[in-house]
Amino acid sequence: MKLKILILMFIAIIDLAANEKIKIGVLAFGTVNWELDVLKHNKLDEKYGIEVEVVKLASKNAVSIALQSNSVDIIVNDWVWVNRQRASGKDISFYPYSKAVGALYVNDEKIKSLLDLSQKRLGIAGGSVDKTWLLFRAYYKNKYNKDLKNMVNPVFAAPPILYKKMLDKSLNASINFWHFNAKLESKGLKRLLGVKEILEEFNISSEIPLIGWTFNSDFANKNKKAINGFLQASYETKKLLSTSEKEWDRIKPLMKVKNDEMFTSLKDGYINGIVKNFSITHIENSKKVFDILYKEGGKKLVGNSTFLDNKTFWNFTPDIKW
Image (cartoon, rainbow, N blue to C red; front, side, top):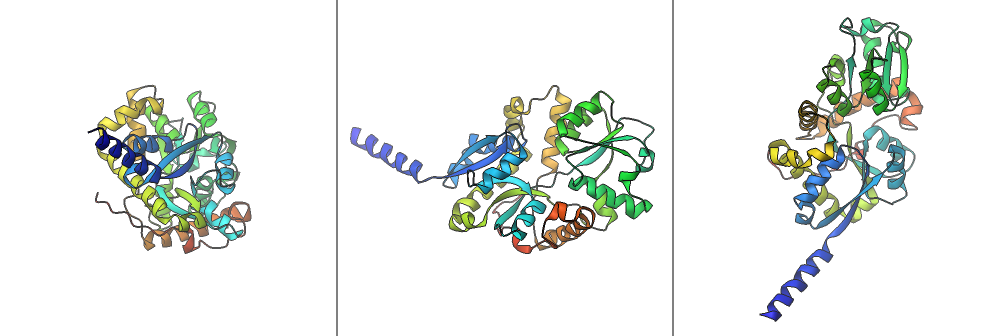
């Protein structure tokens, strides 16, 4: 009996040792942590022969540097950044993570359209080449033949600062990331316009994931089973989060929500951002978005790239039914 137990323990140790470690670099308080927590808690990494190690970092820049220095294996970034790296000779790949996108929220009930923002204080997450801001500018030019940046008083700041400025009403409106917008919505602030409507104005499908899992192609090609195993585990985690109230209740403390309204708003925002399928059609539509961003942001945004390369996107089809 003792021998049998020892043999079983030895087999378990061997199996554990066989799991390949994958380091995921994330922002310390980013929403990606929710998914990775659920993935780890349900041992979906072990299911596919990998061991996910979450490496928490202080800033978006630190996350990008960690990937480029091989300190981590995977991060979350957007395909514009990945495509830019490829154009500069760095072979990096992208696989969709979420189609959640930014939007413009208002503090003033009198603001019914973008025209009403004239001379108003508009908060913008990131800098002058923030992708959502550039899409808003392109939309405004297309619709009103004017540049939005000349019509408003832009205030560029980090997302948390913009969120606070919206709450204390020192801004008339803001363009921010989806999870801060979800928090604003839970506080009763109204959405005026989002990337979804902007893309539709240009006859582009709004079902485009702008952010995704990002990794070095060389590492991925040498560890294809591990990378694809992680991507499969990520999909299964998303499916679980789209159906399980129990999992959301379990990770609620991680979300640091102040009330049930904020919790529900963040949960719904995450679920609505889940990418259930990705095909060549999505890539072709992404190319149209790239062309708009290139026209508006130029080299400051896209670097040496002049088009969106098909090779930017990692080829993997998950085995999952929604």
